[in-house]
Length: 240
Ligand code: FPP
Image 1 (cartoon, rainbow, N blue to C red):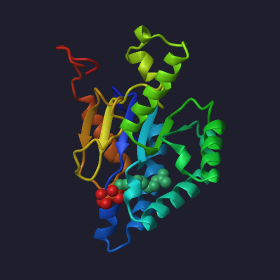
Image 2 (tube, rainbow, N blue to C red):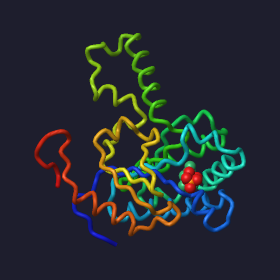
Image 3 (tube, rainbow, N blue to C red):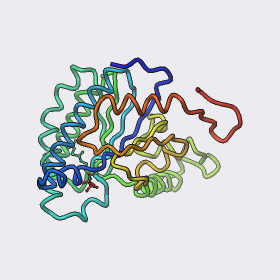
């Protein structure tokens, strides 16, 4: 286990390449997602062990429904069985949160999400955030709608609307912005992932396919992050 100076508060991971990983082995895509889910669990545990405070992962986007039904079903089944394992997180001091539109999922899945959040509510280690049926633009439009309702109800005046006020209507209310975003499998896109919260994020891109991602791959990304000079639009270096 590596000791990290300048650990980012919040890391986002776009877990890409499950399909290619499976294809390389002549396996069906769903076995790529299965391997990806196993990697995800390992990395979440490792992130907690090294003292990371927030980790957000892109599990299922609003666009992923366009995939063949068989593949969508297999990802949802993986989610269902993973939700059944989540009771252990409270003991490991991991807090779980889900962001995205849950209304698309079956009642049992929604109930399990709520249960996992409630059971782990008091954990003080890693907050593990799963973006599921999530899209950044949809999140912003939803925030605008909730804010407009509050303005109409006289709870907020238009003059009060600033960045902090707007942020409080996002799913990530109370969670710091993303400092480091990691995308696997050699892709260079943000793909509608936390577009508001990534405004000043550093990017680390790797060719590693998500199922092959190891704790050492995360260590390397954190090292790279630690060596960057963040300026937030100013001239002098920030935290190093
Ligand atoms: C991207 O690989 C991955 C996804 C769209 C789904 C992410 C899902 C998992 C990591 C597994 C499920 C996890 C949990 C926690 C239930 P891709 O299929 O786009 O890969 P490709 O670009 O090589 O086709």
